[in-house]
Structure formats: structure tokens, C-alpha cells
Length: 238
Image (cartoon, rainbow, N blue to C red; front, side, top):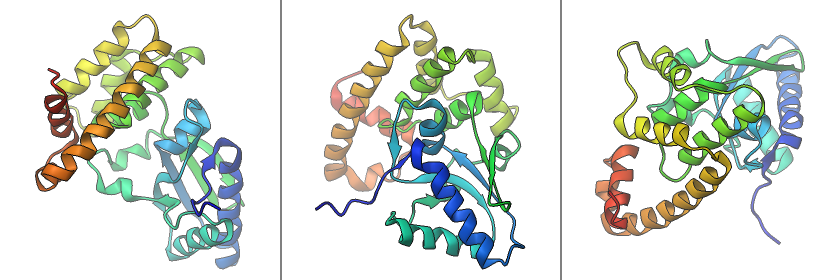
């Protein structure tokens, strides 16, 4: 039997958040109040659904020690990874406290846990800021594709504004991110482009594994844009 922890899906996400709130409510004797802002995979599976599952939830966790204890308790109860809900995202360059301001209400669980999500141009902006060559690229295409299908089409200008809202009025999209965004908006078939980018990411992951074996120390000193450049160089691409 596999010992792999259960995945988090659209179907069980609300259940897990309710279990978290229930435990937290009990620990704080009904007096605790906490806020969780979902970013990344949990938003993709719950709102955009072009990815069906995730092993963890990235978020901004505004709560006390009791909430952290409740997160661990739910991990034990449901056999989840201990970091099934974490705020490691706050240690990345994509994080900004302004994300809370531009988040959208998702629901209140157990009368004590308010959950919000980063959606639309703001989620795209976060992904463009991160620009992991093995995950964020297809997420960006997927978000734009599903937004079109939902009648919530995003424009280049909306995304640029969101980027400045989050990271500062003087902040411009990095050249590589801008080029990639232009590639998406130039496409007349986002479904086909999504599949192509997923394949590119698979190749990028394989190349990255090889590079890590040979140049691990150098890679760990690079940002994701520099890593993508190293991957392209190894693959013989411009």
C-alpha cells in the first residue's frame, strides 16, 4: 500500500477547512478568530479546476498558536502531510501583505475561520512574479483560459495594474514574464497552448533535475528567471 498522503481536491477542501475551524473553535473555547488567504494551488483546484488536486495549501495564515495546533491536529486526523496548510509562501518574492487587500471572500467556517482567495489578475500577477519554470507557466495560461470560459476575461492592462497594485507603482513586469504574457495573448487557441506549456514544463523539470546534479550550488543562488535561462541554455533554446 502507498504511504503517500491524501491529496487535497475541490471536493474535500471545504471539509478540511471545516474540520480545521471545528478543532480551532474547540481549542479556543469559542473565542478564537482567524483568517486564511488562499494563494496558488488551492485557488486553482477550487475555482479554476484545470488542476484537480494538490498535496498542500499555500496561504497567508493570520492566527494564533492554537490555529497552528489545529492545523497539525487535522493533519493527524486526516493522514495529511504535516505541511498540508502552510505559509511558506510568505518567504518568497511573490508575497506581499497587500494580497489580503485584493483577496476575495470565500467563506466563513465554524463561525471562527474566515477564508479568502486571491483570484483573477492578482493571482496571475503572483504567478508572474514567481515564474517557476516547472509550474507557474501552465498555471498562468490555465487561469487566463478558464477566466475566458467563465466570462471573466482578463486583459493585459488588468494584469499590469494588478502587478503594480501588489508590488509597487514603479514595479514593471520582468522582461521574461512580459514576453510570456504576450505569447498567451497572441494565441488564438489557449487550450492548445496550455497543453504545449505543460509539455514544456515537463521538459524543464527533467532538465532542472540534471542541472541540479551538476550545478546544485549555482542553481540555489539563482532566481527563477535565471533558472529558466539556464534551462533554456541546456536545452539549446534562445
